[in-house]
Image (tube, rainbow, N blue to C red; front, side, top):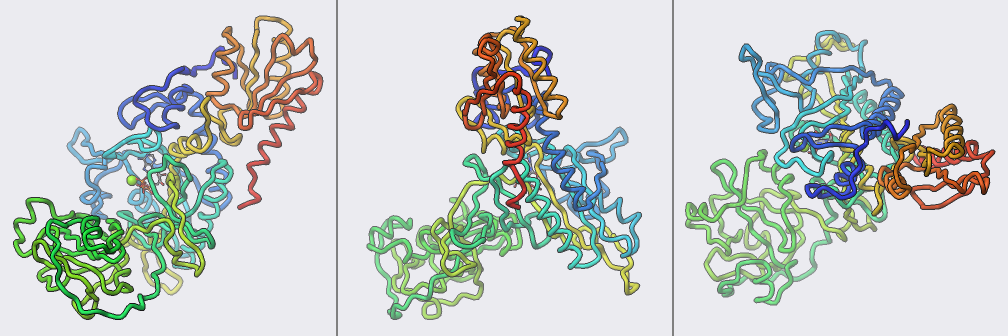
Length: 577
Ligand code: ATP
Ligand code: MG
């Protein structure tokens, strides 16, 4: 590729709208351009990176015998009505009508469509298992499209679906997919972790997310400093302490005028937040739930949604309190509380002699105990864990928290979609059964951004060589000088013929501009050809990631650069997987 004909409009300054590094650098390096909020065009270099990631994905999908197909983005509403998702998906689904007023959606995902295709063709257990995948554009009208490619409204996803005849077969498809994902993200050069995850709206029980570790990540994950436990915040939990050995005391009401928050009560009574139990009142439908949680903890609303069986709930708001005169805002507690569903975080079960609101203005109760002062029927894990909490899996470890970018998600779906759509096969025993399904996504365009979040410096992008737009860039300081042109062209041709992806900066531009662009775009290897090259007989080579500079004799230059390319390629190896 010659820079003189390349369309890569680089920018000196970061556009003001970009908040995160990957967004800034993708714009500055001329790899993407914004069309509308959450909608981007890939320019030639950005597209090359996307294609490289796609190719790694294809190779690893094919390796586990998944077959590629391509479904339409435009999908009839009828299919979505069969599973009720037409009504559940809400405003995130982009909907439209055709000229005959028929409803359509631009696919946010493809479970319905793929199930419809497979159910018409696959009738016997003998034809199972089947895993199909596509790499295709998805549409989701996100509330907050942001961070460039990280959260788009139109984005590229790899989505795969397995159709299995038994749970064991599903587990095998799922495990194959898990190892394929590990290989894919290793080959992309990512530092990542697979974590236990919640399934959300998509259904199913077992699921794991693949998280690229980066500060800009929107997700929080927890992992153990000792064993292999790792979970996303929505499912991460902790091992409870042993029940407190304190002797149970007699509860009593104490005056706490104007002391409502945990901090206020804690300093007023001189007790730690860990000795206080908060009572939070949530409204769901026309019912109320009182959630008990330790004073220093917060409620994870994803976990609460599972317990309440609804996504539609909120903390009682200012004016709503007036509808419930028995509840004293700021002083609600579990003792004597009526007409409210009481759910306690399981950590309360190991606490003794704690403080709660007394259901009277300006008063709290001290030395309260479950069993003595009130009963709990419904225990659940509702807390957001914290770094330092005990690992739930091993005896010794403590949890560490990190920020992550979700680049992949794999689910054991079960029969949710096949049952809803009547997608059946005849099993070995002659019985009609719904397929047991799995679904497996990768955010391909998000992965481009994730790579940059993990690999950059103040000068620009530092691509892992496996996904770089080109592996080597030859920077020719004066391409109009015959001597430099000759050396550069011969290295360019020699590397190209060995299968190296090579670019040549043959523009009539200042040396400064060429160096700055090469660092900004992030080619892993830069080869510098100037007036000194011929006179010294040496070619200068810079490794972008380390800044290391090497000199190769002219007559061996192409060969040595090729070896360096191979070395960098092998450093992103699969040995660790
Ligand atoms: P998120 O929690 O980030 O919204 P999700 O759980 O909705 O993701 P899935 O439905 O599992 O995502 O989609 C599969 C993959 O597609 C995700 O793991 C992620 O990498 C990617 N993805 C999802 N939404 C977007 C988006 N708006 N922009 C870019 N990639 C996305
Ligand atoms: Mg989402």
